[in-house]
View 1 (cartoon, rainbow, N blue to C red):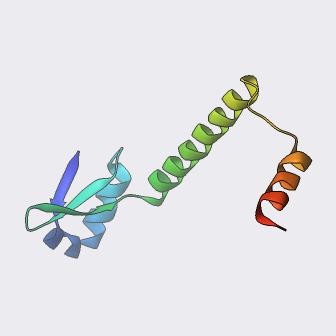
View 2: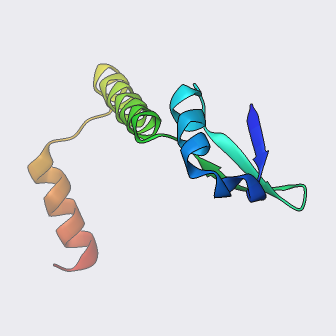
Length: 84
């Protein structure tokens, strides 16, 4: 885990290089405590994509396990429940 003090953020060019070279987010500390996390846009997009894949895998498991319902039935149940 890469961890740098907040005062080093002044050297933006070096921070950018660090973010692109790191395979994980970089933790910024303030007064010795974790304060922020920074990462490259590529890393951020990769993390977001992994989140989408995890949700798709969960949905596929639900389908395989029979945890599904007809969309029209689900909408009608919600309308009845909330008086819509």
